[in-house]
Length: 449
Image (tube, rainbow, N blue to C red):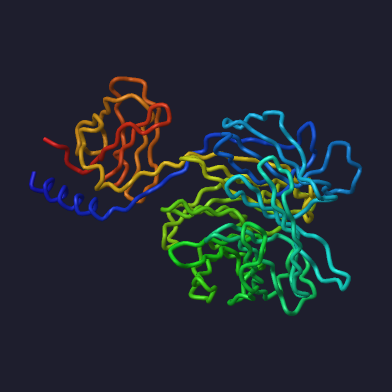
């Protein structure tokens, strides 16, 4: 008994220092192209319209029956979906474009802001086209942004944060202009522009330090600082978060993935950063999600796709990349495209996909001190116990990792976790996808007498 009391005291101390935890549960997967209209769908972007309770997908498309060469895209298509991701029949194309390709896009209130390549000036300097659309995708206004002669106009950086559109181009003083995909020998900076929602410039453009790629990057403003999420090297493709003050003076950087690039999808929800990114080489690889706390400490990493990478002559695999994120309530919508990879070349037959995850935010153990919330006995136990509840049971360890999940339909169910290490565990019970009860489970070598 003395050993049990001592163990319980130690576990209570652990509980008092436990932090919030989180997990992601895959709910559904959707393939949106090819469809009756489009044979290809690249740069898939998903947006949510709150007042309509509808989702909108936008992607660079090629219509059915096109005889254009592989990889040639003709228009930016949009399609409307219900809250359950059922196609409503409403669809169209963004006006004002004669072709389509790399683009970035954000939704602010009921307007969309779309950034893509406009071509070049008479002197050969590249340009961006920034267009504002209403929520029916009618063009409201448009401007051109003339880039530097050492700027790339592909895989744009654009986010709306701190009351402004942050736009970035990859800038390398040794290249005129940088080619795509970026050379492993590039040592670029980010060329940054700032615009308001009326498409007016609100600050002078800046060449940022240190050296980093804006190639498929994100920018988030939080607590007085800007954070740019991008890779530091195409060759090694490690994902970093670069921290700047409010005037974009460089402060520090944090590596957030040992294998990550093209992180154009990023969300801050007030507690966590969610970052979707591409792993592997530019031509082949997969999509992952990283979740980070306010200090950019990794909470979890989840695999969105897990295609095997085959790099033998004529070996066929797939390349999932260019992800984007939208969060709606406790659900995370990750859109991306997938193309066939026939070693050593990507086939440019991109297709648009969406995966939907439920966010399970299990707060710290110390916030659930009452075991009577869930019927568990004995508790503490050796790991073998009975639960007298019905519903979807989830059990998490002190790291927030889900170690057990089961749909329980009986009045009494025996569960064996005796192989788990002793400690305090969070128990969560859901019914109809809602958490209705929480509690703690203590696993020790002694059972309660």
